Amino acid sequence: MHYRGLVDLAADAAMGTRFDGVLPELEPYPHDLAHAYGELLFHGPALQGITAIEGVGERAMVVQLRSATPAQVDLPGPAFHTDPVVLDSVLQAVVLWVRHTRGASALPSYMGRYVQHAPLQGPLRCLIDLEPSETARGTFAARLIDAAGRVVATITDGQYTASEAL
Image (cartoon, rainbow, N blue to C red; front, side, top):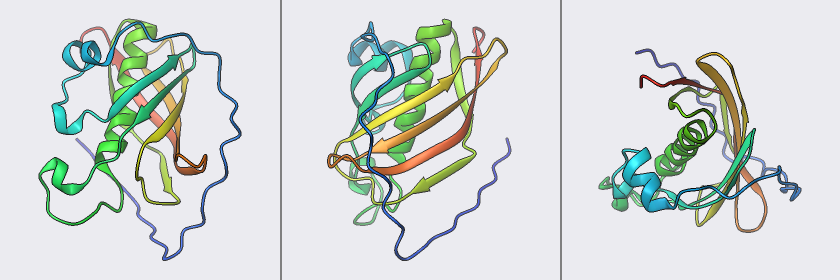
């Protein structure tokens, strides 16, 4: 395995833009969360951050996410700077989208860029744009939106590997 990262912290990160409210064309996701977490994903209760699946499309998925505190995942400290449950839940949604659209398992393997404008707190809406691929690799981007409609974080240039053998 290989990991590489660059972190650039700023005392006052500029707040993200407001979400324009435009959603891609979506259809209902065919499974409930109990099936998704019981049959399609492997995450235990502490990491089950998807609270609702609004819909799935040919190139998109929209989910509702919960944020977590360190105590909820058995870690010390009062709060996360970047919530690992939220970020992992974005990747969980990518796995569900690949399974739904390609009938294959997926392993998200890369985030090209992650920008966080504000704390990941409270319920969040996540809009994921995915680029289907005929090969084993595909790409994705995501926007995390808070209850006030502000884009509080973005992921760009994400990659996943899909395979029926995974």
